[in-house]
Length: 607
Image (tube, rainbow, N blue to C red):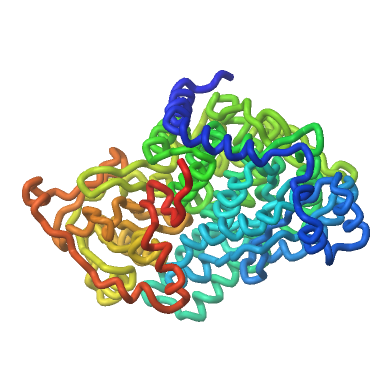
């Protein structure tokens, strides 16, 4: 199938807009590319330091400087269930590459905070900028000039984008991303959400809530809802930096181990020392970014990627904006119903046909760039397959021709809705995004008086006092990157859900973020410019009528234009955001952060 003409036009628009930055990026990459190990340029002292602690056999190969040496960059820690399985990967990888005449070294660890643990806590104010710390830590790991390829081990929210941004600064190196897979299914997500709402209403005890949460998050692996972590895995697959079918295989299984071994051996085979050199910079181009956007829309993926995918693109010299998200959403049908867009989890999605079926459907419709470089060769058709063990050996076969559960994974002929999951919101309150795929049609348009809050706890306190039993639009302001690091406001979801279920028209407008798992209640988020940067949300007063139209993409306050222009912005004392929980160390990040539509980045990448 030929490429959809609208998708082709959007890609060309991005290519034209990005030409200067992309050409400069690729020129920088070219200066690093070499047909022999870069470590040959190190001094004897440098080299001796680099492999002093290596096993004798590895030391011989490293001294010879002929065989590939693979960097392992890992986000392992055993507090994150998604990353706990990564503990054993380095030993597995090192042994795997020895079988193909290569070596591997653990180049560096990167921090990995859990948004599930910090959600609603002060530590969440470090979450977004942890992505930038991870990017810098990845660069530190790779800057030793010892490596011919990279394996990035990570799964969750800010971690995969951070690893990718860092790895792209070494775009001459072949790079494969290696996840651990989702935990097995626990309590159904809809039941978990119901229990959270009951607790918010004071109808359950804390112990009853904890019992339910433990049944939901019960073992090793990624949380099973379709939030940012699992959206990351979808993106890495559809952008061609996973082995095909890697995203949603459970940890601790023979297939998962075989995929990890396969990734290690594959990256050793695509270095500049062989005949199949495939640098990361060649894979992550305009077409791969567009493919990522298509996947995000087709699956109803995380709103956080309205920030992270922008930052990833910029790290590769490519400029995208929310117009691109909106225009791609208009032509890509929603093919997946995974919580919060439905009731099923990612294990059910995977069993229904998963990424292989989804990619095959999108390719057949001309909604993906097929002729792209990937870590397994030229062409995205490689990803319309699923992995399996053939007599114990890793192999691939064609993905199923039909979905095994059309209530979770729809064929292109019967999509859940004709357009995608994210939409641009704009008007006299600025620009933001909304995830409409998780919101029922009857709740997508709200026009009601504003109630202004200067933080999420203020709104929850008002809810507990019974002051929100009415139609309203909650405006939670001064939550942007510069104000407090742009924490997720997911703990507002149960209270707003309760009010919606009671029949009130409610919505949220904020310059902050919501969790990738948020849905149900219409929320215009990431509103930019943020309040601290002169954004119009700082002008809103309680009682102003706001119209949030998720269908038409309208976000506006119903005030006479002259009165609105003359109104002064509120000014808050934000000094409390600068202290405690390590926030002191991130003051510089907040001071220079770009806007949400520019990736909310704390570093200035050349463009």
